[in-house]
Length: 439
Ligand SMILES: Cc1cc2nc3c(=O)[nH]c(=O)nc-3n(C[C@H](O)[C@H](O)[C@H](O)COP(=O)(O)OP(=O)(O)OC[C@H]3O[C@@H](n4cnc5c(N)ncnc54)[C@H](O)[C@@H]3O)c2cc1C
Image (cartoon, rainbow, N blue to C red; front, side, top):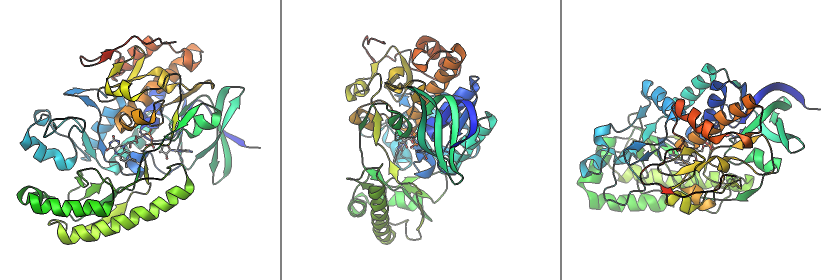
């Protein structure tokens, strides 16, 4: 018999960006909230996988993700652990690009050369963890770390809580509404909600310290042909990376490397993840040895750390009441029931609602989208916007005594806006307006 260790209104599973926003929003809107996390820290991939840029949150110069996301930025800024381009630098200009490119703070989707510098934030993982911990403590959220979701508690087709595996054995946390923010759809998939299997490459992020970044950048700008040769070889050794494979961080002399990318692995499979761990380290060691010898500025560098978690971008994806497509994202299709936004695309409430299971919501990178759509719509800010939306929706359902699928979306949109978020209820000038049935 599993002991019930806690009873509450809303159980949020997963303390990453989406789960944090969901828990804070639900609590601020009057619900009692428990937040469960398998690791000893909050932040999800932003902390454990050392994903260190917040992007995908502006449409030209319009900031599209606000609310709790911006609160986290403000908190990290106060700790001097966040850096972003000031407004006057946010434009397409070779000098601005040169200034901000090695921070990774430019528009990756722009077709212009150079791409415009835009509002995006480089941060430190300890900053994200601390901001998350403070928000959880200040909002009276019952936090349970070291709690690995194992099984849903279902009463007929209705969620009534979850069971976690812990060092103390199995523990049940009961609640009227459950929000799945595990990133891999652990809860919804086991509760019987339809889903599709997605995949994308894995990445073991690493950080190098003792880098003379001014010298390293000078090499790039003053000896571009020589630098290109070194960069090409480094990328061969990495075996997969973005163009700017090392980026500056708020900590002087410490750069983060969003690589190596590793294909052919499933981020939800134990054996694949074990093999990827070894492969990542091998590629990082080889790259580091080469760069130290060949890229001026890296002579005295050292490996600070490999991210404790391999970066998994996509595994299971919800097949919810609406499945967002690549065209929806690319064509900026506006939905009347939009409750969250990314850079210029919109997320309908229906994409956060599972089929078949009642009193269950999802938010984050496993939201209801096709695999190709998710690849360009799952950055940290939009995941936080989804979390905030479902947190408010859960509190509204409790207040009204209704099912989460019956929440009045126009009221939800109004509440989100009043609380400082942008639900995307008002389409921007470049949106594609399409009437979509909402039932
Ligand atoms: C290598 C890499 C680079 C990226 N680069 C960027 C970037 O530059 N900018 C950007 O904005 N985004 C980037 N992303 C995407 C972004 O990091 C994710 O999409 C985002 O973190 C998703 O947030 P989430 O809360 O949905 O999931 P996650 O961040 O994955 O958080 C899920 C949380 O749930 C917990 N959890 C999972 N399963 C269980 C369980 N069974 N029981 C209890 N807890 C559980 C996890 O420990 C974690 O804390 C990158 C992703 C990767 C992997």
